[in-house]
Amino acid sequence: MSGRVLVVDDEVEMQRALRAGLGYHDFDVRAVGNGVDAIREAATWRPDVILLDLGLPGALDGFGVLEALRPATRAAVIVVSVMPGEKDKVRALDLGADDYLVKPFGTEELVARIRAVLRRQVDVSAGEPVVRAGDLEIDLARRSVTVGGRTVKLTPTEYELLRYLALHAGKPVTHSTLLRQVWGEYAVGDKYNTRYVVAQIRKKLGDDPANPRYIVNEPGVGYRLES
Image 1 (cartoon, rainbow, N blue to C red):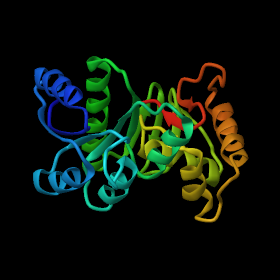
Image 2: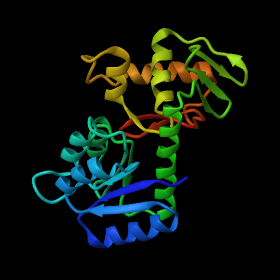
Image 3: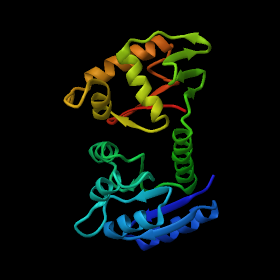
Image 4: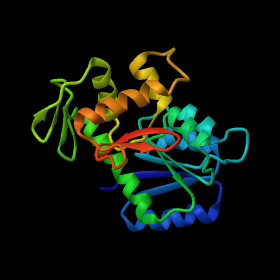
């Protein structure tokens, strides 16, 4: 699986390393060093994936680029940053980033992340009605959930939370995003709702919260459905 990758990073050495590493894996790579060029290149070249550094020079930092890109492009955005803080990660994911990778990282891990977001794009465009995580199956068309062939009965709220995780399988989803999507736009600032409902879903799925197979904790961020 290959595609077009736009690197947005002001470090020339990083641009060269990513060009070489991703080029070796048959990706078509272009690189820019600031936010203005990133927005222009995304509109004209139409990449499949954008690797976005948050610490860009000038008035338009990575967060500003992400805000501008999200309504204008369907490209997956993977934030690559030296900022390891949870607040930066949560903010980037809430603004629409598809993944977050802290520098330094290995080429093989980056390639795996890129291929994962490309697979999700294919699944969404194909209208895939069934999402699988091991022996867990979520049939989005029929609104049914099974584990190892056993039907699992969920409350409407539990199903909606699991459904949203399934629609973004493999991607970290923040507490605040789940609150808005499941409970409404004004349900903010209360993580207890999501934690309680996830605990109930895990119990019904037979998932061990200490070593979950399906719904995985993203510490300080939220949850991710394995896929």
